[in-house]
Amino acid sequence: MTFKDLIAAIPGATSVGDTNIELTGIAYDSRHVEAGNLFCAIPGFRTDGHLFCQEASNRGAVAFLVERADAIPSGKAGVIVPNARQAMALVADKFYGSPSSRLAMIGVTGTNGKTTTTHIIRALLEANDIPTGLTGTLYTLMGQDTYKVTRTTPESPDLQSILRHMVDRGMRAAVMEVSSHALVLSRVDEVQYDIGVFTNLTQDHLDFHKDLESYFQAKAILFKRLGQTKKTGPQAAIINIDDEYGRRLINMCSVPVITYGLSEGADVRGSMVTVGSRGVQFLATFPGGEKQAVEFDMTGTFNVLNALAAMSVGYIYGLSPRQMAEALARYPGVPGRFERIDEGQPFTVIVDYAHTPDGVENVLKTAREFTVGAVRVVFGAGGDRDRGKRALMGEAAGRLADWVMLTADNPRSEDPMDIIAQIREGLAPTGTPFEIELDRERAIRLALQKAQPGDVVFILGKGHETYQIYRDGTIHFDDREVARQALRELKKS
Ligand SMILES: CC(=O)N[C@H]1[C@@H](OP(=O)(O)OP(=O)(O)OC[C@H]2O[C@@H](n3ccc(=O)[nH]c3=O)[C@H](O)[C@@H]2O)O[C@H](CO)[C@@H](O)[C@@H]1O[C@H](C)C(=O)N[C@@H](C)C(=O)N[C@H](CCC(=O)O)C(=O)O
Ligand SMILES: Nc1ncnc2c1ncn2[C@@H]1O[C@H](COP(=O)(O)OP(=O)(O)OP(=O)(O)O)[C@@H](O)[C@H]1O
Ligand SMILES: N[C@H](CCC[C@H](N)C(=O)O)C(=O)O
Ligand SMILES: [Mg+2]
Image (tube, rainbow, N blue to C red; front, side, top):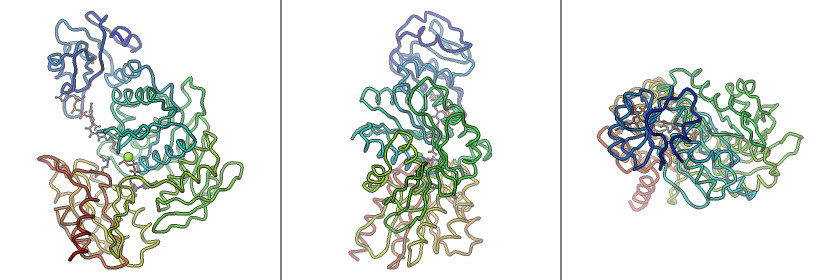
């Protein structure tokens, strides 16, 4: 496609140079430019893409999308736009042929449960012979193939390229996690969603959004945009009515709303919930009154909500409650989400990705429903992320666990001891005994050594992650591997 064709749709744009040139792709980072690319200069939080136009040119960029004309290397073609992120989203959609117009497009947003819910939605649709691509925190998934990702919701050129790939691979639907960062930073601007799913809103990411209201307004963007496409398939907002922000969101949508939850009045309602150590059982009631008993191996009331959200999507696409229950009964679970590590030890070990106060509270409350012994928990909090959540995570752990081990979780540029001190501010007043061990491997080993028959040991915050990010570099680290190895050694000793 030529540069000229691509930029025709950008409002308020002016071009310079010969725009009648073919482009090979779109880049927004000079370090990843390939010959023949369009380079989009993004003003960032840390630096400014305009400073890297020359470097991009040296690497073979032939055209430039900028907010400041003086950044265009001399003699090169360029377009000057009012907002580079928005314009990049427009050209990315056009370059890849608007793939989202050819997929049943489902976006899932909310503080917790996006990864889990997207996986369950995919399982339900695929059980009904709808090939469904998925992209989110863990990977991009098509058929049996997984592709590495670096963001929960990729930048617009990467996302549009993924969606194109899904269309080319014969996917009929795409389900994706939509982070609040993505909504604010125009990563999903041109994506034509048919269905938006709202899981919940609790504290996280206030380093970026400043307050909970702005964070909510960011999430709401997805829902305000629903119904604006020319697509012909079903369009709906699927909203958790048990969540106070969900209830507010209902009035902000111009497409039909299906509510789900345990509350009376939910369109897709869960009741008679039994939480066991190896799964949940509940009754789902659908609009019109049809009832379906469900058994699901992912335990916890929060996973009942994730399943109800997914069943609401299935309902919109005409799946029968019975068929959905059969698919849920077969579903094996999501990596790093309430993942049991079993080496035959007489206590339970669970690796989970809880990294917010609400997440910690939910998993520990779930454990309280079936644990006969003590509930022990090993966790930390990420560096360069919302500081306000740290003490709240400490408080939740202190209130609901019997013993706590504080350790490091991706300290990034921060001193891990400072992060722990902030968690301790919420934890110490609860009076629950705790220890500190900065080395996460040793922390896990110590917790497992202390465990008695009947106890549950939670290792929280990293879930599927296979790394630990420190100021001076990233090392391989996998809670599941460490726990498994430690349990084997304990068995021998
Ligand atoms: C806060 C945030 O989202 N920041 C995003 C933002 O970074 P930034 O504004 O700081 O960028 P910058 O470093 O100032 O650079 C400005 C521009 O110059 C470019 N550049 C920079 C250096 C260079 O040598 N050459 C060059 O071209 C950069 O690629 C960028 O386009 O724009 C960059 C790309 O343009 C993103 O990669 C970056 O994501 C960062 C790495 C990030 O950590 N994001 C996280 C917080 C995030 O997005 N998380 C969400 C939610 C996670 C969840 O809860 O699941 C996600 O969707 O993953
Ligand atoms: N519906 C829910 N409500 C509250 N907590 C949940 C819910 N679902 C999952 N959790 C907790 O949050 C953790 C993360 O779940 P999941 O990965 O599905 O969320 P996410 O929204 O994708 O997170 P991220 O923003 O990091 O991508 C789980 O390991 C669990 O502890
Ligand atoms: N995806 C989220 C959660 C990360 C969880 C934790 N392991 C951390 O690194 O903070 C984030 O980037 O904020
Ligand atoms: Mg996720």
